[in-house]
Length: 351
Image: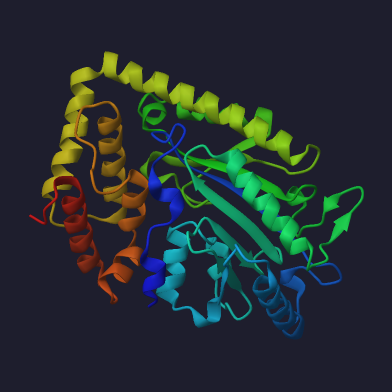
């Protein structure tokens, strides 16, 4: 296990515009090398050549990027799981075998570049709160720096060429990770998400496509990347994000006014369980933490003083717990450690 992966990433800070609702903003660019098949069509020689070429490219970048290159075949399975839990790589990248997959990460873990996932490169920048423009500026500069060394597959009509047609054009997927307990509890979230498709957006679960929205956490992103400029896609997502933030604030206020004592009781029960439980599963912990976060935002219970909600959401995941413990843990040991760490974060003691 690599203790380097056990730190919190920058996006988990819990500070910035609308950070009570928007946990992070991400910009991801899909890029492929010209005259090479897409990753799923690479033979072993081509795959190894791609890895070596990209590793040399990252080393040759001008000072300031400080990207560390990790071949996933040389990364312990538990460390790979932690990288997924921290949203630095996708679940798809670590599907076995991982002979020719890699990731490059900066020291603050706001930049991660996945290599040989669906595309040769997935350039990703993740920042805290609603920092879409800042994330785009970093991603754009990094894209330009890489293009000085690499010849990306590009067509004058279709834009950047990608393995999946929905990524053609800009190759950009921008997303925000949002915490929406108010809309879930008032049963408005389905209606809100239904309207997203009408404006070219989609809602996904905690770890993206095909995953569940654990802890009332959702990812909102553009559906396609062709037909508009990067700035237009970002503007549209920012507008949608602000509308969702407004709807969530309105839902929370409605809950406070119409379900005052019932809401306070629900939050207090969640807080009571988290501060006294001796074992907690990851799903139960995230659900209860979501309710306590809602209560803290509304002033019903005190907010955790030692960690943000995003940090707690990652801290309580199975891989991260074991990395912190320094060894593999049984499911029961994980549940015990999870409960103890949450008690420490909420009340400052391991009672």
